[in-house]
Image 1 (cartoon, rainbow, N blue to C red):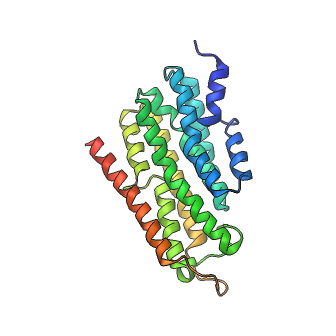
Image 2: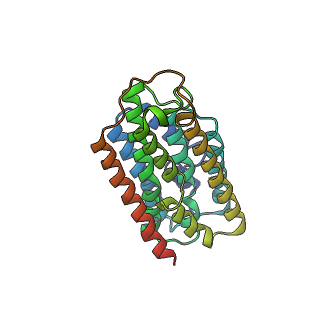
Image 3: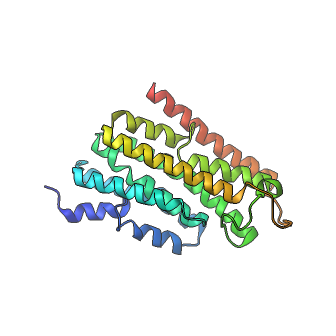
Length: 251
């Protein structure tokens, strides 16, 4: 019998509400880009290591708790306009779902790769947020819409990051979700599909708030440079290729 305190500790890293608030408070207070990136990449791995020490024993109540946590943060994404807060809430919603492959008997290394596949686009989203902050002093949807016209390269990078972050094919998160859905129970499958739709809806609202429309005022801010655009393109291509490799694992 695994102690309740062990699950509570794991719930800090594989988020279970309200323990999930710890990560979001920490993520909001940290301003350093490298530290935020490190948090996104390592936070769920700590939880997976702790869960593995229990033999991946996930009781049904904990699984329900995890699904509810993921759904709660997916719903909250719809009302968030700050890109940094949005990124933290999406990470929380995504990582809560990692309890499901653990219960379904996935290997630790496979779940860890899934976690990294979800977290990598979030790291790129933090980079995009930093680019907005350096130009506008913040990254708030709806404050400066119509950026597709004034900042086309930055707008395209933001759109691709958002699509990758919410598990849109052909990015790795989609095939991770698909591999779990194939083996999940009907109830878990239905819950995950609803959560995925909420992520997609939230991303569409974020894109609308930043990119769509006509700029209300003239934008004198410089777009990202061509070398940086090519660098981001290479990173996006790496994510695309990772998704293709995951497709091979499913066939």
